[in-house]
Image (tube, rainbow, N blue to C red; front, side, top):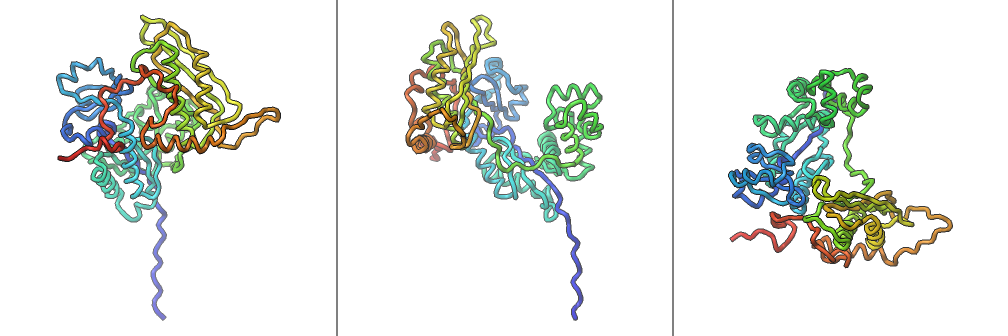
Amino acid sequence: MGSAKPVVPFKKPVQCFALIDCNNFYASCERLFRPDLKYKPVIVASNNDGCAVARSAEAKALGIKMGTPIFKIQDLIREHDVQVFSSNYALYADISNRVMTTIEGMVPRLEVYSIDEAFADLTGLANAVSLEDFGRELYDKIERWVGVRTCVGMAPTKTLAKLANYGAKKYVKTGGVVDLTSQARQRKLMAITPVDEVWGVGRKISKRLNAMGIETALQLADADLKTIRKTFSVVLERTARELRGESCLSMEEITPTKQQIVVSRSFGTPVETLDSIESAVASFSVRAAEKLRYERQSAKQVTVFMRTNPFNKSHAQYSNSVTSELPMPTQDTRELLALTQVLCARIYRPGYRYTKAGVMLSDFYEPGVFQTSLFEVHDAKPKSKELMAVLDTLNKQKTGTLYFASQKSKTDWHMKRERLSPAYTTRWAEIPKVR
């Protein structure tokens, strides 16, 4: 008889989450096809080129804060040759998709949390490889394949992974990667992290925590859980438990269905006529309907709202909204347009300078899942589904290929995008040419 083989003890998989976050994402996207901007300060402006919503490290070093109005820093922009770009959402969405696809090819499970960050489930990976080495490989691959720099934080809970990512961003010596699976390292980082930097702790809550003597993440982790729950909420108690290494938040691989869809814009210049407002609301309705079909939902409730500029006290102020219901839930743009135009006319008042309007769809149902009243008759438009599919297919290739007449009567409400970069990755005509 041969000798018995030694029994290999079973190793319980070590739970671990990673948070991968792109650095200064919008500004980084603008630099991708502009190598001449590598060391120059770059900022991306909000809708209508109003405020700074993204800043490169060089722009931050100049003291430009998030949300600073562009007109207030014109002297700074000229003095330091700051490059200002209008928000190019098509470009950012495409680069984001490339980043997420790269990550997805390296991890078992992925949860896309926002356009520039994602959680990955690395449970069990520590049994086979060094987490720090894996994080470094992930970091290098995204930069090499996509051209965007990231920070990677790894820890036993999502909240601690967020904290690890904060450490990777704040402390240059980490090289953009932090493994926070060690309890000693967790406590060391928490001790030097202000409590308002903890995921889910906002400004108001942090002020109340400070008043209780809780100023760091470590103090929140060590706080009495019953007191936290009684004074604040079960949500903050869960945050404290996560900081202690107790995982309370699981991966969400399937994006939850939206409860409502809102499409609104600030106008490039104030508009006064009903014709212009209706044109804007029509365009918002069309976009909302596209999003509704993408979610595979039908909406029964529609809201239209409009307002003047609340910060301009030299002009008369007006703000109003109105909500109505359709007889049957629908995802047909034509039905939604018909209702929003009626609602728009109902709340419009002449004599005001309108600066913003919008459409909200709510009360969602899956298509075909709705019990009508016994006495209610509703004739659905013939071939509605097929027509909307053709509309979406063509407009996906190029926005605005097909449009409704009510969208184009006026264009004076369109956003200002005077510094918009080319659609480098989504339009053939704007692909960079190498000579």
